[in-house]
Image (cartoon, rainbow, N blue to C red; front, side, top):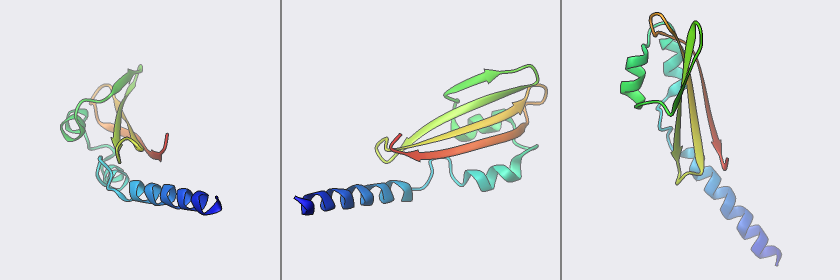
Length: 101
């Protein structure tokens, strides 16, 4: 009985490690975007990642949100990019990647 439990835990652990080892569907997001704050336009982001999943408008800024799944949907990656309304230039970003969500 314990052997089956241990085997199950090991298989789940291996699946998690495999899922997390796959490259991001967004590329090397954090490194790239740190260098692009104040430079990347909304139009360039749409060309790079496609239309956002959703967009929220504010008075001075708007945030575009992209959701990508990898590893057969086991890992969800979320990318939030905040742009100013006037020039539509990247002002901030947040990226998360979570397995089994």
